[in-house]
Every structure is written in C-alpha cells, then in structure tokens.
Amino acid sequence: MLTTEALRAHLVGARLAGTVATSREQSLRSYRLFAARDPRVLLGIDPEGAWRQRELIELMADRCGVSADSRRVSGHDVIDPERTLAALDAFAERLAGAARRGAPVLLGTGHPHRLLGFYGALADALSASGCAVLTPAQGRRVDITTRFGLRTYNLDYVRGVALVRTLNPERPGCEPGAHTHSPLPVRTVLAACAEAGGPLPELVIGDHGWVCGAGQLGFEAIGPADTDDPALFVGEAEGSVSVVVPLDDGVRSDYYLPLTRYVLNRACLSQ
Image (cartoon, rainbow, N blue to C red; front, top):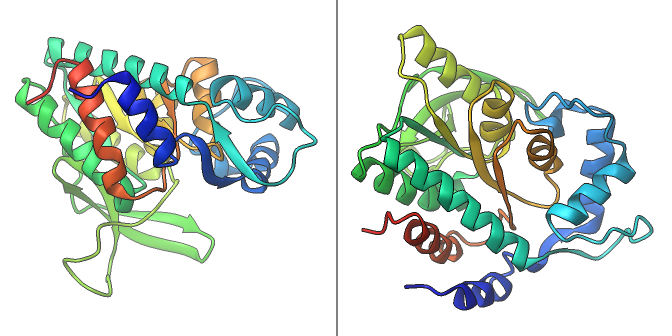
C-alpha cells in the first residue's frame, strides 16, 4: 500500500507538485484570457462571477499554492503537494460513493498521451465494482475550432475512456488520441446518452472540457488540472465542478501510476 508520505515524495520528485514545468508566464496568460472570457480557456464553464485576473491569482494561490504575488511574472509555477493530497482524498471519496451506488460513470480525457492509463485503471476498477462505464456516441464526428482552424475529429473509447482522434492519423492504430481543451466532445456524448433514453452518468471523470462541460450542464464532475487551467478551479469555487486535483497534467504517463494506486486504495477499489 502506498503511504501518504511516499506519495508526497513521489509528487515532488516527479514534479507533479512542488515546482512544476508549467511556467508562471503561461499561467498568467491563461488568467488574462479567462478574465477576458476567451472560450479557449473557459473550457465550457460559464462563470457567475467577474473573475478579474487579480481574483484568479488569489483563487489559484488558495486552491493550488501558486504565488499570490501578482508582481511575480516569470519562472516555474508551484503546486502545494498538501493541496494535491487533500484533493486526491476528496477525489477518492467520490469514486467510492459511485462504486457503492453502482452508479453509471463517464470518463473522458483531452490528455490521452499522458492520462489515458490513469483513467483506464479507474474505469476498470469502477466496472469491476458494478458501475456501468458508459461509451455512447462512439465514432461520431465532432468539429472543434483549433488554432489551426476548424478540425473534425472522431469520438472513440479506449479502456472505457472517451477521447477524440484525428480523421486521418499519420500512423493508423498508433495514434493515442488528440489533445483538446474543448467541451464539445462531452456535450456530444451527453446528448447521445439523452437521445438513447439513458442512462445518464452520475459521475463524470476527466480533465479540461470533459469536466467543465459536464459540470456546467449539472453533472457531478471531478478531475485533475494544472496551474494554467483556471476554469476547473473557478467551477469548483462556484459549485459546478465537484473536485479538482491540482497537479501537472503533462508529465510522463507512468508517473501517474502511484496516484492511481493511491486513489483506488483510498476508495477501497484496489484489485
């Protein structure tokens, strides 16, 4: 069993927390864009508050542990590992609750290169506990505006985890899925659930637009977020997102394995 102390050491050593790779400049740029209501960083959230940049810095300092000093404009951001651990415990409680109820769940990621293994292990454990892992709208096309213009993707599922793929990957069968912040995939999936007459997910697990898009529509949603993704933390502060785990979402995929073991153990879902 992975102890809290061992996980804390891993978080810092793997730079999932502590000093992370995300730059202060990158985070501040996201806060400015969020304050300006740029849809690229809203991720499907429709904020109730004004959320000026100063307020966002204060929120992220409280929820993540980044510097609250608005005059600090360069260097690497910092995530307090104690906040990460506390959020992982809350995340595990939501998993345990879903497992006890045998609740239908939906998992999706905009970070398949990094987080697919993490979510896939959760899907396996929840399925083994009696939860229905939903996979609607497989193969459906989704048009997403990117910095390169409008791109069309296909919805797909790997190990019960939703993601989007480019229509013509360079290496068919090898491409793990596309990186996206868009809430359109989860809206498409939830609409397909409704069109089919259910079931609808009682818990949505994911990142980026998967969490924000679902939470904005009233679904219980939980997942990780980096310091340059203020939308999830705003959603948590305003009540549309249930749990956000502050961590670097771009490290090596195997670095998330200890987190998987920890939350499954805390949720009594270890296999």
